[in-house]
Amino acid sequence: MVLETDVAKKKNSSHTEEDDSDAVIVESDIELAATAIAGSCPAKQHHTTDERAGGKRRPPTPASGGRKKRGRAQGGKVTSQTQKERDEEKGKAAEEHEEQKEREFASEADQHAMDKLIAPQEVTTKGSLAHFTATGVEMTAAQRRAIKALGAIFTNKWMPQVSHLIADTFRRTTKMMCAICCGARVVVPAYLDACAKAGKLVDDAQFLLRDEVCEAAFARKHHLPDDFSVSAALERRNQHGPLLHGVSVYCFPSVMERHDLPHLVAAAGGAWLDEWPASFPGHVDSFLLLAERAARNDAEQEQRAKANRVYDVEMLREAAITQMVRKRQWRVK
Image 1: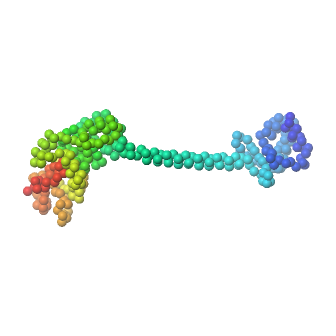
Image 2: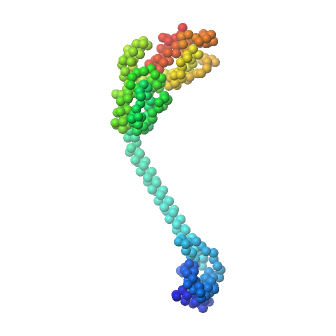
Image 3: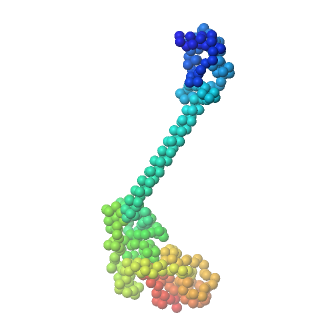
């Protein structure tokens, strides 16, 4: 065999200096040769391997593919081809990392450009800022799905974030009063159908609640002008701002039904007081004291006497609907 002949030659000419600057000694190949001549000269093969290692046995170095390689550089320094391969792999990895960064940068730039193109459309097609609730209307599953498809939110309870109140008629409910106080849009259920058909929030001008019969009945009961309407009250609120801005409201113990009042005060921009104020500031208009016509007990009667002005609690509910505070008509004598 060729390898056996090479081994014999190297035994006989061990004094000859080898020029193996470009040679690569592969231990696995030698091991194959050793296996082939195992019966003839195993000791000689071991001696030859030591000679090629410079008289010292080198520890095995892992290489790619499970092969172990050693070599001698031209400058006389022994270098590892495995290290070279690692350096090459690191270089390739660095190049791939840079390419990935460039792709990500290009992707971000493309996305940014695309955002500029579609941003105006998103404002008109998505209702991410729209928050719906309803009063006097049983919402169907299809209507709830339509609201969700618009990117909007629906809640059963009143929340300060509500932007649209759905109602099919005028009722003096807590949600209706709060909606008017905070300037929310009061629309009929057909508005949801129009939005679902268009796939976006459409102009609600033609879907605003107009209930002339119930609005006229409310106006007669409270001795209001004939032109009272929910739309007019909302317009008044938008022109003048929150009705109770900078005003603190306290209800005397005689007011038993008060669960809706804190919500009204908050929606109108006021501050609700749970306890009787220790002192009153010089500006009386910054406080609003509400009570029933008859005092609950002597202690309340005494507090009323100290307070200059006390008003019927119904004044606040009327003001929430009309956005007008008629103190003279509702003052408790």
